[in-house]
Length: 369
Figure 1: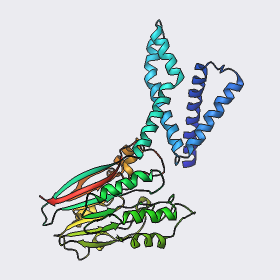
Figure 2: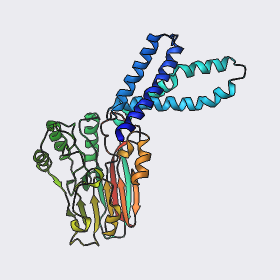
Figure 3: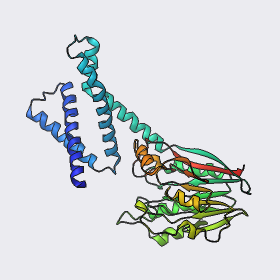
């Protein structure tokens, strides 16, 4: 069923691209009645539709942006064409018709969107949150970094500059929220990533929870083994929290969950099991790569959940869909007495562009109300 659906979508895409290409060819003076010209148009449309079939490549996303913008222009032009069909056409109308036929507007907009997306992927901002609590705790500054996907889609020079910037914040606690590395990260670069992260100075240390990509589950050509990943993390002074917790100072608990995998299919300890024996009067933070099970965290007395994974959609309009499907897409949320912070991530996944939201590291300042 899915195969036929995909085939139908690709066929419709190819037909629409054919009419776009034929219209543009006519504008540039090509005789679209000639079989050779029509054959070229058909071939070009089929090639572009075929490339768009693999949505895991940036070029497919760029083509789909062009299709979306071109379709939007067609819909806007439709009432204008109907209104002026039987009227005298002046110079302005003729000029607008030529602009429309040339496809220059969707083409230029696609180029601009792509350039912005590339710039946005290589621009990491700092996002601050202030959380107040009635619990008896000392002020605490937490730096949250998720979804680095090291050495894949982002310029590592930009990332290294941010590590220096984070060091200068003198955080009390650093949380690495998963997907620090992935299938596209080499063994050498994986070790480099944790060597740099381990160099960040903090009062209470650096803690790490696994994401769904870190162990390279989506490839048959792994570049490092699980034990090599664990060694790289631990040898650089980073503590792994997988269905476990640690005490931070006198009145704070930091817990970390094993990743739930795609569709929440991987068995893992419940929040109740992880926090067994924990004094609920202490301030409890739960690090979970995916922004799920917020209700369970609230029921178990968790005060703050920190997550990533969503990339805030990364490619517009994906964020709208993930927001309405899962509810927790990006930003600060509230579930009962539990605050939830979902980061868009320091980088993105797969695509070298980001047209939805921004790349970020998160600074959370927790203090008494």
